[in-house]
Length: 184
Image 1 (cartoon, rainbow, N blue to C red):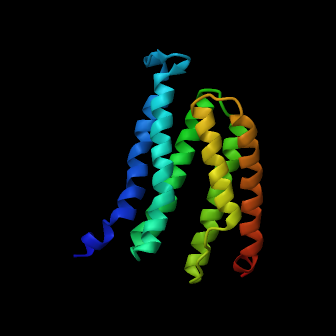
Image 2: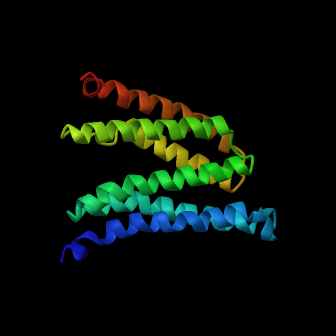
Image 3: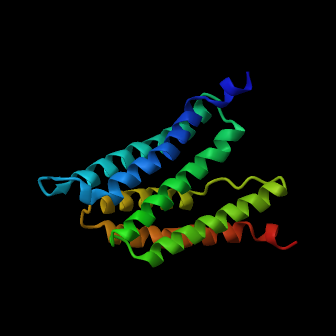
């Protein structure tokens, strides 16, 4: 009966983000195949709507898991992985569309590798590195910036500048707080 406990609502929400990524990318990258609704490209509208839905699942899965005591090993694995897959895939698509500079995306991806690596080292030492407040603020700013960029709304790039700065700051914060793990 392990499967019933593992496939709970929070984990299904996390998995749904992984499955929404190709949908978002199809609408976003094949946007030229779609018509316009007023000034909006239908592909952008659909990609943005699915990205917002996926982002909302990210807000709820952890909350539900903690509130209902449904935290599982699968959830600890799939939730951060789903977030990274979604953000990285969409940012790469936005680079292809010329809506975000490549260097910003490289900085964001590099930070994700660094923090994931730190978490793996910590886990091997029996230490859990929880999400920091800076990491959470970084995530919110990235999501807002990405939504603005998907919809091609002015202000997306300034928000991504902020998200990139927060990405660097939160990555540095994780490194400083985990320095003792890297000394051996």
